[in-house]
Length: 345
Image (cartoon, rainbow, N blue to C red; front, side, top):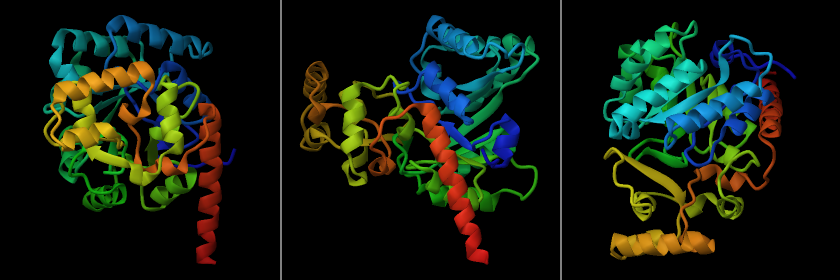
């Protein structure tokens, strides 16, 4: 395997500058482990976990690396800020579980006061008992968010998420290339954290393009949802396999179908447009939409289901093991970078 060296690969000790996103309902401990085995870095999501379930997931992860010893777990755990705020006692327990299990990284996103939780991670007694301090990844949907995280919070990695991203993101976020370029232009040339591109990325050729633009790596979500290790329901995976980029939409309608109203006001979600969106736009009341959605889940009616995915969905059709996905991404990155070198001949 030809080495690809970036500030991210050096920081994490990985071979492939690819991170699998901390997707609620679509990632798992097994997925994160297989991404790591492929040479990338995987996150599992603690968004809707309990301390017991997260502890079980991390125990499974450690069992998957029997020779690890006292080294940190080579995976990360992702948290959603507003969900942490909703249940402070349980959220502290969840973070402590991650710290006690010596995870290599923690990802924070979508909070009105993320620094509060960043401070807790850094000052928790569970952190002080560990020889390894987790690397902090902050997901940013605007230049301002990113600069605060870099300059004021001194975080370890920035995830620059563009509007193409599936799942939740900034309602007014620019494209992935634009937010990446804005941030790289605003940062000093030396002693800055790795910046990762996120949003609409499905293959290694795209990753290579962002690497040449200055990113230290890329975050992929939808691509890893189409793996056997992902717990995303089969009906949702099938919908992704046949979707085109133009089938997706940024909207709050899909959250309302789930009866979720607590996202920060600047956040919405991208998924496949279905009759849910049509009904919301036509003025159908939310309770009716929620009842129709519940029935659709029972009957596997994809025309009224919620399927989160990014705009790069049209580039993904095949379900394959996560380790193979990472290996394929690596090969395509190398091939693309080698081809780009010919432009200078």
